Length: 79
Length: 248
Image (cartoon, rainbow over all chains, first blue to last red; front, side, top):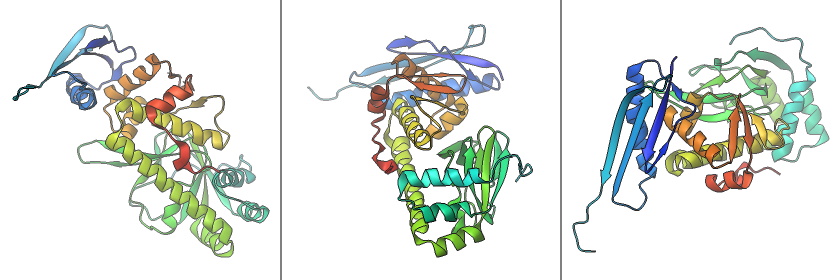
């Protein structure tokens, strides 16, 4: 199976150095879509705005797919 | 079941593994050792990713791991799979089949794995005449349950990196206890996908967590060898306390 690399930006950019095998481009898409809510579950920290982006690259490091997850909080009372 | 019995392996070896394992968690007397050595074992080697026991099987024997790793898992209709227990030399992964007749999960050899089968009838006879061994085996199955509870905590509540760190810590302690690991390194025969299926993460997330642990300087994994560079750091991020392994 071809290997794809999933670079993830969540404040800072983490370059994927080892990659993950994916059967086809549909598998790349679902892997990219799945990783962001998994990360967001645990990494929401203290701020009210979080943006998680993943860029999937092929073995030549050409980007093939990207997706972004935004979490935005807004206070509805004075604090 | 596959493969032929391997006559090249000495018959005393399986007993030695079981004795070593039970001695790590219970008091084992000379008589207990002799009784284990008198058991009749059938040694078989399974290729990587082959089933040792299938879900739904009604085994008449249980198996003792001598070399390699095995895991128990369940697959769901959506193609997802949860691995919830790893077994290493000295473990009897399916000892429950003595009492629970239908296997409710399969047992799979990870890489090439050698196991020794013992007939249920022989195990029952042993347990009936040797109460101390019966207690040691009971204790062993209880510890299997404590490991399972610890896995539930990981899957339910630990962050991804903590889950992975916890598994790495547990496997090091278990492998070291039976003399298969030393000097903070061991063979980790899992693929990235298997690691992910054990930790309840996607493959990409498992990969990211491993790279995180490497970036922290805690571990490196190269050609299936895991080296722990900072045990204290790994233990801290895992919140690992080996008390649940009940090693004496």
